[in-house]
Length: 389
Image (cartoon, rainbow, N blue to C red; front, side, top):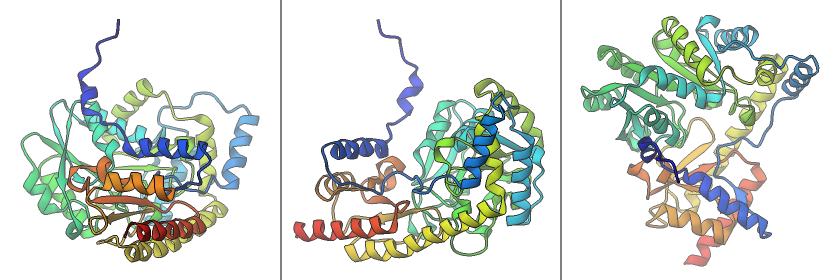
C-alpha cells in the first residue's frame, strides 16, 4: 500500500536543469563529448588554504556538532568581510551559519511565510525560491519582468502587485538565471515600499561577490530590517561543502536559531572550520583572480551568442549566466536545447524552470566552465546552426 502524499507536493515542479544534466550524462556514457553550460557550478574548487583548514579540523578531531548559529570564528570572519568589502558594520550576532544558501532560504521562509500568504518575486527567477515559499504553504506571486526592468522587480511593480495577502518580497541580485543586478537606488525604493506595507524583504546575494560592473554594495546598507542570504558556493567555489549564511534583524535571530536547532542541528562542522580560511588574504586574492576570469568569459560569450543569432537584450553584470532570447532561431526553447544537446553536444537550459513569462523564448547559458570549452561550444553551435539552414 502506497502512502498518501502531502498535497503540497503538487506545488513543487521538477527541475528541468537536472533533467538535461541526466540526458547529458547518458550521452557521455555512450562515448559522446559533451560541453556543460547548464548547471551553475564553478569549474574552480576550494582554495588551498580552505582545503588545508579542513584537513586540520579533521586531524584535530573538531568534528562535533556546533551551535546552530555556527562557530564564532566564522561569524566574526563574515562580519569583518562586510566591513572590509562594503564598509558596513554587521555584528556577528546577526549572522547565522547555514547548510548552504538553500538552508538559509528555507529558514527564512519557515520564519516568515504564513499558509496562504503571497511573496512577490520576478519572473524569471530561480525556481527553488518559489518552492521554498510553497514548502510552507505560501504562494510565490511571479511578476513578469522583461529587459526594460533588467528582469528584476521595481518599486512600481511591487506597489502594483502588492495585495492584502502579500507578506513580502524575495529578490536576487545578481540574479540566477539572468546575471543582472538591481540598481542600488531602485533597491532602496523597493525596500521603502515594502516597509510601508510592513512586509519583509529577503535579498539573495549569493552572487554578490561576482559583480563585475560598478562599486560593490549589499542590501544590508539599506537598513537592519533587510534579510540577506549568502553562500560559500559561488564566489568562494565551495558548492559541495554546503555552507552559507543568513543576516537577520537581531530580534529574528533567536527564532531562526530555534528553527535551525530543530531542522538542521548545525551546518557541517568541517565546512565551517574550513570556511574561516576563505577570508585569509591569500584566499581572497585567488578568488579575485577567478572573478576576473569569469568576467573575461562573460566578455567573450555575450558577443559570441549575439553572433550566433541569439538576442542578449541585457548584458549581465554579475554571476556567470547569460539570459538569451532564442526566438530569432527557434520557436521553442525546450526543443532547441534538447536539439543542441543531441546534435552539437552542448548543454544549455531552457527558460522552463525560471517562470512562465520566458519559458519558451529564452535559454540560460552558464559560463562557469573553462574558456577553451566556451570557444569549442561556440564552434559547435556555429556548425549546428549552419547545418540547419
